[in-house]
Image 1 (cartoon, rainbow, N blue to C red):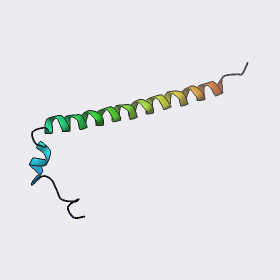
Image 2 (image 1 turned 135 degrees about the vertical axis):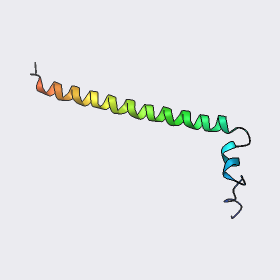
Image 3 (image 1 turned 30 degrees about the vertical axis):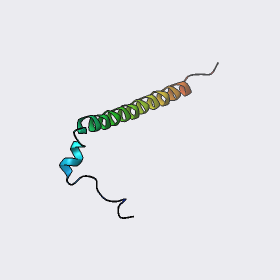
Image 4 (image 1 turned 60 degrees about the vertical axis):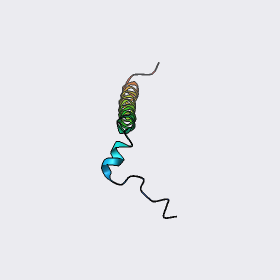
Length: 63
């Protein structure tokens, strides 16, 4: 079980470099984080618009 928790990299620099593929790995991670943050922001904006439209619709007289 202790082998499962063994670190594959001897130091933090090696971990960040990921065997010379660090630019691709961390660039991909950054792209996903940016995409998720953008999605979260878009959902908030959409929810606020819907909420404002519902409030405005409540103030209008029914036909």
